[in-house]
Amino acid sequence: MNKNRLEAFSDGVIAIIITIMVLDFKRPHTAEWSALLSLLPTFLTYLLSFVSVATYWNNHHHLLHAIQHVTGGVLWANMHLLFWLSLLPFVTGWMAETHFSEVAVALYGVVIIGAAGAYALLVRVLLLNRDKNAQLADAVGSDFKGKVSVLIYVVAIALVFVDTMISCALYVVVAVMWLVPDRRIEKSLHR
Image (cartoon, rainbow, N blue to C red; front, side, top):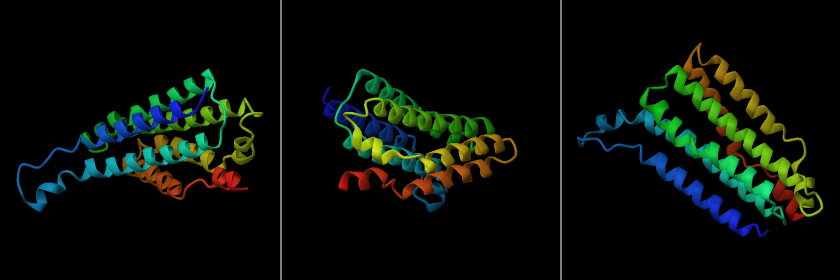
């Protein structure tokens, strides 16, 4: 199967996810700077989620660029990733609306771990067909940064009942960690 449809569909879904998240911004009813201050929790959660979704989009783009063959299993693994990413607008909005309540911050962590696990599964399914996706197999390696990210997410969820701001800070640490793109696939493609 050709990978172009998978790429186009995924790009469209991810664009919609980002659009839905920004729709949670409600315009202030007054024209004062102080009115914008009430939007700060919404903006901060949007920024965190935007960076997370953008990171997945960038890595997904590189991942699909490195492959030649798409199977039914790949399609389902990709849908699994899109499912978890599609939950981000809900947990992002809920976290902002509840001003970072324990349950909302914990659920945000569960969703982001779900997305990380789904991405790892997508990579593994792609690697099942090493003959046709040899470049990817060479590039993937041990995925140290991915494993550390999941560990940090787990710690963040555990700490949510101590202080939700520590958990949020850990989510930000992972997002910042991934702002530096994963160059393994790019390097492999340029060899």
